[in-house]
Length: 180
Ligand SMILES: [Zn+2]
Image 1 (cartoon, rainbow, N blue to C red):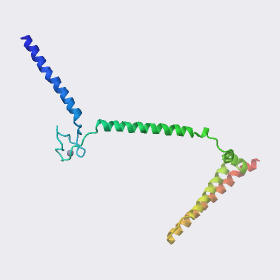
Image 2 (cartoon, rainbow, N blue to C red):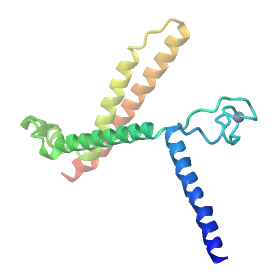
Image 3 (cartoon, helix red, strand yellow):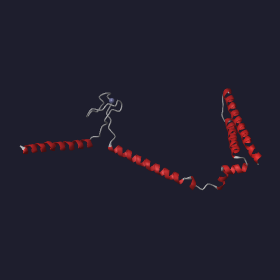
Image 4 (tube, protein in one colour):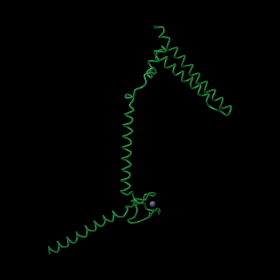
């Protein structure tokens, strides 16, 4: 009785493992299909080639090769990023030898040259920027009179801002003069 039971259990388990092995083999050979429909999201029935809900063709899931390719692409991207980073580190401003004359463009150098206090110098630079804006407004090409008028107003506003900025610079400078 016990022998029979052992026999059956062995007989019961043996085919099961074989079937599992076969199933694995089948899964390896056949390209894996997508689990769910791309358009309606319905899960595909086992072995179906089309969606039973909307009729869309069942696509092949991303194969292991495609995944490997994607991983390779990701690796290449990582490498490119690393290279860019090292390149940028090489371009670190601290390591570049700027020409000697460039230090004349430093703010304190300009301040020393012109002899204006910081606030006045800032106002002066803003004023210069506004004048530049007024000049650049002349570069617009217009076709209608309305556009031309708009440009004139625009330029006038730039010049007004420049004037205000220069006046502010003068006002900011005066107290320092009195102290001198
Ligand atoms: Zn569908």
